[in-house]
Length: 239
Image (cartoon, rainbow, N blue to C red; front, top):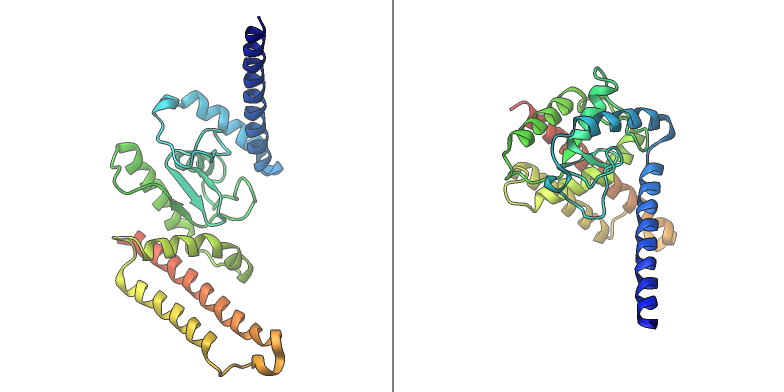
């Protein structure tokens, strides 16, 4: 009898913890959406649920712990914005078309202007849905990737653009060789400046403050690499 009640208690605990875990995921996903976009995302989510013709188990999934904040499912054929937020490719395209078709969208999470969409899924899938999604992403980038950017917006885009740029540098069939050489030259230039005894602000005289010019040079080189990578993406769209 004790075994039976112990089994029942364990089963009840598992159910409770599972329910709490689901509520925790739902609450965190809900909080990710910016308050100004919650109503638009809610309406779009209802529309996507009614139009969804692919059963959930058949969805190709990436990042087992990453949920799309729009559809509340695991990211399917994910697309990353220049501000570093991940969505299902079809969800962010639907969000664009449902909201501001003629202008660049604001990120549903941080409200930053989205001027670039970066695909995170592989190139080997050539299904009709994936081909159409790539065309939509390219169409969006062709319209808005060339918009002028302020220095603050470039700084905010740095983590995402640098991560994608360096990933393509070390991948087969990624960036063309001229761009790889330019990135390597930037990295080598930053390294030699760091080890060089000739500084605008010598560390021997100014101590820790002497590293400020080193950090500034590296920062400028990173900005330059991100600008180059954005130009490469724009050039791909014109081929």
